[in-house]
Image (cartoon, rainbow, N blue to C red; front, side):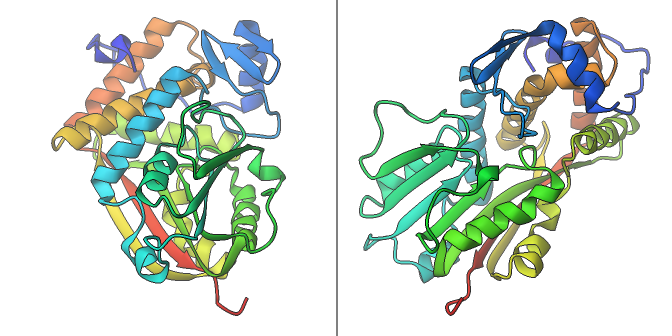
Length: 322
């Protein structure tokens, strides 16, 4: 999280507090927020201004870079862009498939896969237009819409749909609607690939545990479920009515175990940096230096305890005769 996270200044054993209601945080944030059409600028970072969305991460160049990095780290961890069973069920090589990426962000995955399968038609949807505006593959189009208002496509439009890393985008009660919309736009026999983190951190360190418990409380105060990734199988099968074709699980090391662990820790720090306006207010920390010191001690504890998060990937199929 910038140079502040690399400091090793003592924090005198300060414990992370339980997060307060987000209504208090929002009121305090107004003091340091510049509101412009369709965006808010908080402490120099640009955020969306869609009231109906709980998503708190920025929509600026720094965040685009973080999302690009997250794509390549994820690809290194999982070893694929498209799960192998999907390539068996659907003929990407021959083309003529319609593919949708929900909450596509800067479209790193879309740009790679649309070039790899030029005969297929790829579409991305997101409430923020972070994707390439000028140069992009000819078989790639984008739609700027809020997914929570429904997917603006007819029933049975796509052979393959992907969605990933939206644990901080959808409130717990919004997941069923989003999954039902994805199921609706899938063709019979089509596949849905969903990749998500369980953001509850596994660690033996007391300081690190204090953080992860506080972060879960913070998420809950906004209606978010930090453990959504671990519940994907039930949401997709029991609630979504689809069949699992393939599932994968990886432990994501936070700052240890080699280059992937180091890279993911840096990416995780970028996430916390983007959330900082809300985290600082919820922790009742007004001084940025005190916040940096607290986060630095927490990050050091995560590394020392070999902490990790769980990464889940599921490929499910819509019934053929739906």
